[in-house]
Image 1: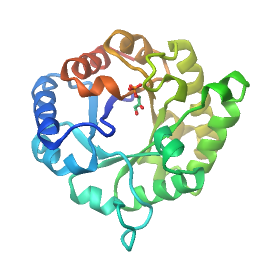
Image 2: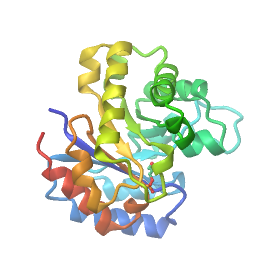
Image 3: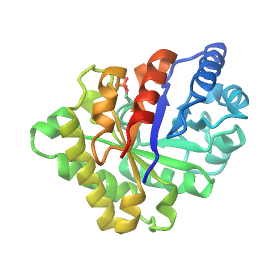
Length: 255
Ligand code: 13P
């Protein structure tokens, strides 16, 4: 059985004192939740401060991006090793906002996945189609390309640390959530594709999170679907009440 995962992508929010305050609240309020894994993705600037808060807790920490090189003259970039040294154990890769605004191509995403694994980080690879792509009947093609390119060169053994996040672009920050059936369809497709790329065993072990307007009132139904192994939460992860409510929903889902 896979333990559900609920992750909070704080995006470009949270000054350090706000990040520390939110992390403190989450640490205390998630104490009784043993059947769900929780991961926080603050901005780079708050990683160390949040790491200190989470130090003696089960909450895990990650960065929202990394550069594919280990070090060098890359002004403004952050390496996997740096994320590790700041206390991170996860990293988001290929979020649609990075693909849309910062030039993250499938090829670069792939380099980042490899760099993350080499640095000892767990990559959470984000994939998802735009509204136009969905309406043109290209869901399978788009997810297939993002996955095949993103996972190129990975073996089943190296994929044990990997997680996927299905985030349909049209559901991100829009309040329009995929129906549980739409999300389940995409997740089942993704798991089938991973089975072809990396084998059935890897596919069954892989956690696939849903992201896109997850809120306390829709979380339980989504995570109750057979191939939905948790949630990657944006806006609602910035409020302790909402994030805790989503984590509680996950904790109550028995699969
Ligand atoms: P929202 O939950 O704000 O729609 O954001 C989803 C997301 O992009 C998480 O990575």
